[in-house]
Image 1 (cartoon, rainbow, N blue to C red):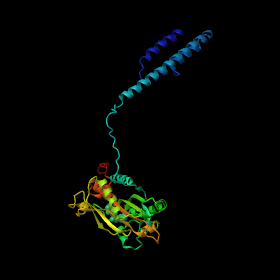
Image 2: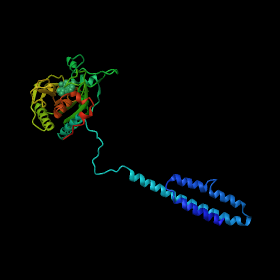
Image 3: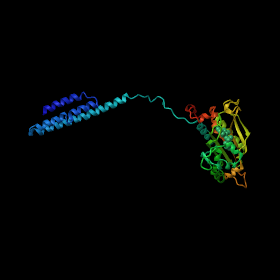
Image 4: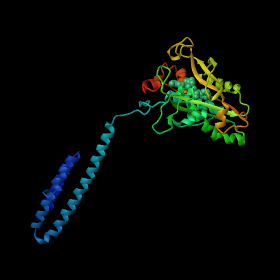
Length: 354
Ligand code: FA5
């Protein structure tokens, strides 16, 4: 039995030396350790030995079996490591100093302009407020001195929901009443002026062209305190526009009618695309209506809980409604307003904030 095992050990060592992958190692394992393998054959031979030789032969076979099992485990570990190294070395190499090629998202130009304005007004002490897109008739019209059947409603036809009295806001002015109620107590009790801007998406049933969309953005602003006058309004408008355009812009004020301001104005900006000569963006007028504004009507201040019936002029204030989408057109030289809603990433991903 000793010679037989010695012979098998040499055979095993020779064959193990030629094994380099898991498949051939498994074949070798089966040849030695399976039911039909060499070790089983040794066990059959053991059964035929005389009784006094069985113990010693059995111990030899067991130790041979343990020895070759240990060799199998060791070889298997070597093969796994070699395979791992091969995969690592064959993997596509990369250079970590190379710039990343993955396309990154970008902010929509209207978001960029909105944030810029929020910073500008924030630096002038204005709070930035958010407001819902679905509003009721009272906030969108009645609280703004536009009672039912008032002809001014025709200028802002919007979309009505099937839920009674719910509509998509046609202008950011719809937030004025809520903001007056929110900050009014601070004004009256602590003397803290109301200064707030509220950007938002607006909707109108509109014939769409190069400068009109059915979905667009405005940014509303109000300031209310004692002795607020048109001079304050003009100062804030001029400061804001010169910061946004980073240059002198030509503006003009025209009388404008909005039931919620008295007096009311239209602040126009000279078209920055054609320099005032006239183009499709400004409907050949050379001017773009950018920011209607005015002094808040006493009725609106009363509905907002700011002034009492007895003293309707205790506090005064101004309001403006900036066309954010039009401002983005001017700032970035976008000739057609539809570009903003078309979702064309080539067009929309080119803009960066300053
Ligand atoms: C208003 O919406 C008033 N709420 C603004 C206001 C606020 C006046 C406070 C006085 C005091 P108007 O309908 O003119 O006003 O719209 C304001 C601005 O929104 C316009 O100057 C224009 O820049 C922009 N705008 C209006 N309609 C559209 C549209 N269909 N597409 C793109 N921009 C529009």
